[in-house]
View 1 (cartoon, rainbow, N blue to C red):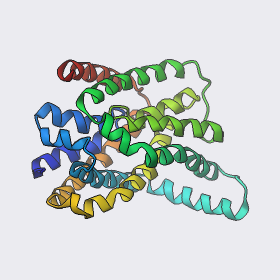
View 2 (cartoon, helix red, strand yellow):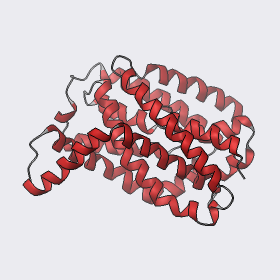
View 3 (tube, helix red, strand yellow):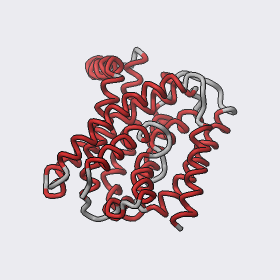
Length: 279
């Protein structure tokens, strides 16, 4: 089904591309197609997929790596959330951030429950992933363009409608090729956040979504779809966790001074080449 070598390659790929704004789902479709791993390509869009069961383990590992990196933030945010339930007030930036994350998580969470299976079976194919990766590049460039027009503001000044809009933007990541981190960063940028705050909000927002989706799908890995791949899933998850931790450390520093433009160019180039290859 899937070899240990393939598990390591895809684990590393997942850990990097889930956080870099270039779409982990798109790359999990395109890389096997480029390498001729045809069974993995066809399994990605199958109704019942052992490959999806494998990817579940990688997602859980990525979310755990994010939790470890942002552990101090999450201790404050979770504490602030429960404090607001007691006081019924938003008095600190952490209390406001806690509820911004709740509001922004709802749209993608509900839409994922309803549409994930349909969108995956329809669009998790090399041709569609190549097109959407190209669209991802356009979205990132557009985000940079509109950012220049927006007045700069801090993360804790977002209102709940704006957080909801960022959450709605995250729904785009259900299409293979559209980056979750990229589209949520763009959502933050167009509301006036700088790259550092937009990236931080994106990574914090990704953690519960990725973890919840992974835990929701864990029965697939424990059931018959996981037969013969649980060892590979464990190895792939270990590599994904390490790659994700290194990636988030790099990107947090990167976005202190840099923009989304390099990732936009990458998406446009790789997407265009893949369109020529697979269409």
